[in-house]
Amino acid sequence: MMHRRRFLITASATLAWPATAHAQGAAPAIRNMLVTATRLATERLGRRDGFFGDSIVRIPLPGLLGRTQDRLEPIGLSGPLDDLEMRMNRAAEAVMPQARDLVVSAIRSMTISDGISILRGPDTAATQYLRGRTETSLTRLLRPPMESTLASSGAYGALDQAAGLVDTRSSLGQLFGGRGSRGAAQDFRGEVTDFAVEKALDGIFHYVGEEERGLRRNPTNRTRDILRGLFGQ
Image (cartoon, rainbow, N blue to C red; front, top):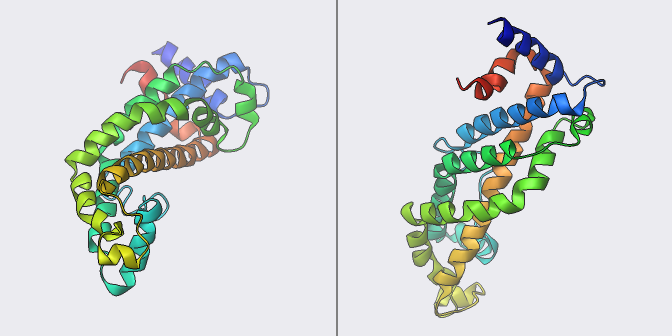
């Protein structure tokens, strides 16, 4: 009990971002802070409308799909594309547990050698550090579960229905400048999947950064949450 209390006091002091902190001592606190921020961010985004109902992180349709949606909406013909957008956001919400585990695993494998620069950096310095060193690998790892979730959510089915709107073989496609391809829906699947992964990670890192700001500004009230993973509680 005394050991935990002493550690709590030490961690609180470390998370107060003192100028005299040593990188070696700060690194565990930074990792635990990032783990906590990631859990809070993915819990928020993983709720219904976590993406779809949030104007900051809501995932729009990419490229030609989005442009066609914008052109069809004023004349009331964007329904299939609107449905696709909703299902893509639902898929991002559903994949958050897998995303959380991937990000937390990346955090725990990080060797933070520049702890002092993170401590003295801006309000999201640790988040920026995490993103810069993990985004490429996280994108690769998150793609398979995102692809599976897009399929199970009905997004790919909705895409098959919507693809005709941007196919030059259809009158609407010709009217709105579709690219025309026998395999238009299949071509769009890769684009939608990659875009959904990219924007899902954008959402995660955005709210990890917001959580980091809160932890920096008021570390003592949140220290127990930060240390929870360390003690396995």
